[in-house]
Image 1 (cartoon, rainbow, N blue to C red):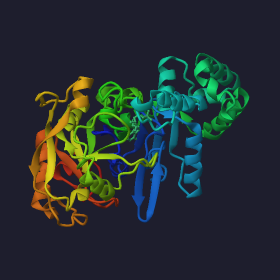
Image 2 (image 1 turned 45 degrees about the vertical axis):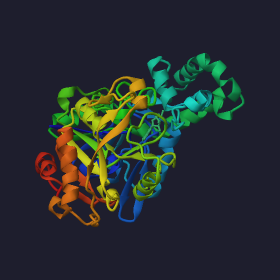
Image 3 (image 1 turned 180 degrees about the horizontal axis):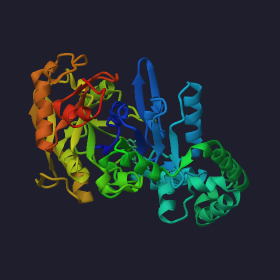
Image 4 (image 1 turned 120 degrees about the vertical axis):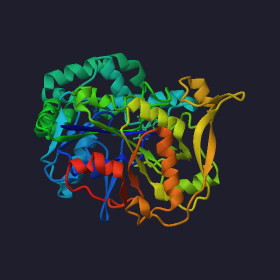
Length: 440
Ligand code: IMP
C-alpha cells in the first residue's frame, strides 16, 4: 500500500504538475484534495502544452483513475469546459470520478470575491477572483451547495435560495446580473449536473479500495504551504489547507494511509498576489529571473513576484507537512545568474533576527532575508540527466538546500520537458524502486 502526497512547499506554482505527471505514470489513482480552479498546472508533452485547472493531469494516461476529492471546490462551468476541451483532443475520460460531496462555486461566489477585493482596496489579498474564498466560507457556514445537489432540482433550488438570502445586501449592486437570476442559475446548474452525472462517485470509498488492494494513490495538492489558511501568511492566503494533513480530510482517508510526502519547491521563490515575501527581488535581477522562468500565472496570466530561495520558510514547510522528499524544480532558470543568495534567517525591525519562521503577522510583514551567498554556474544544465552531469556549484547549491531543510532531494527539474529531470538515488530508492518504469 502506498499513499503519496504531493504538496507545494512555497507559495504555489512550484511545478507540482510536472512531478505529479511523472509519478502518476506508476500510480493507480490520482486524487485532488483541496483548492479549485485558482490552481493551474501546465504539462508539456512533446510540442503540446496542456493546461489543467480542476481535473488531475493524470487523466492523460488512458483509463487512469483520476478523482476530484470532497475537499475541492468545483466551478462546474470550468469543469465542463475542461471536459469538452479534453474530449475534443481525444483524451479518454473514462477514469474520471468526481466526489458527490465536493462543494460548488456558484455565480454569487464570484461576485462576492470581486466585491470583497474591491472593498479592501489597497489591502486586497490579490485573489484569483474565482470565488474560492466565498465558496469555502459557505461550506463552513453550512450554506454550501454540493455536487450531489445538482442531481435534484427541488433541493438545488431550495439550497440556492437559502444560500443567497444572507448575501442579499452584498449582492445588491449585481441585482441585474443574469447569472444571479434564480431560475436561470438553477437551470444552468442542473444542466451541469446532467453533464457530469456519469462521473459522480463516492471517491473516498474508491480511494480505500485502491489502497486496500495494495496499489498506489497519489494525493494531489494545489497552491502551497505558505498559502495555507491556518499555517500560511494569513490573511494573505487561500481559503483551504494546502498542507499534507489536508490530503486526509479532503479525500476521506486517515493519516496511516499516507506513506510519503513530497514537497515541491522551485530553486528560487515566487509568489502571486499580496502578502509578505521576505526574499523578494523587485529589481532588475528579479525581472531577469521572472523572464528566465516564464513566471506568469497559468490561471490569471499575472506576473509573479520573484525572489531568492527562502530556506527558513522551506524548513517550516518541511516540518508542517512532515516532508519525506523534496523535488527541486526549475534549477536551470538559475544558470548564468551569477552568485546565488540563499535565505537562512530573517531580519526583522530593530535589528531582530529570526532563525525560525515567525508566527506573528507584523513580524513577517517587516521580515527581510539574511543570506548566505553561494557560487552560481554558467554551464547549460538542461541536458543533464544524472547528478554527476551537473556542475559542482549546482550540486553544492542543492546539497545546501537539502542539508538545511533536512529532507533528501528526490527529483530535480532542469527544463520544462517531461524528460528534463534528474532522479536522485533518494528518489529512485524510495519511489521508483517500488514501482516499475520510472527511470532516469
Ligand atoms: P484565492 O485562492 O483565489 O482566494 O487567492 C488567495 C491567494 O492565493 C492570492 O494571493 C492568490 O494569488 C493565491 N493563489 C491562489 N491559487 C494560487 C495558485 O495556484 N498559485 C499561486 N498562488 C495562488
